[in-house]
Image 1 (cartoon, helix red, strand yellow):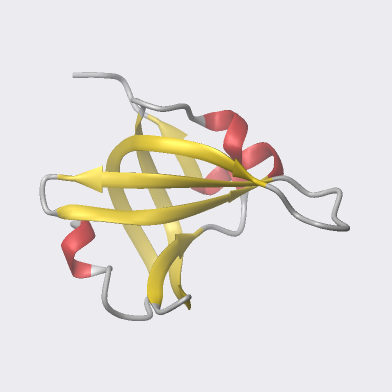
Image 2 (image 1 turned 135 degrees about the vertical axis):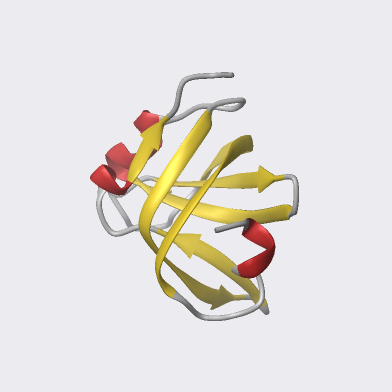
Length: 95
């Protein structure tokens, strides 16, 4: 699946590969959880990827990753990609 096909609709069970273009921590008031927002891109487009807690330790800027069992949700008028478990993101070998 390409990013272009997931940026404008709610979907579940998404499997997509892409490159982490950038990643930054989002400050959360009154929370012990860590939220990182990354931009995941491929040749067809990009989407914000939300990573919670240990999920963010599995990737860094420039990494190629594979997302399995992801889902999209709308935030501030844009769709974002989410994953439920750290096992749903995997770094891939660079080509």
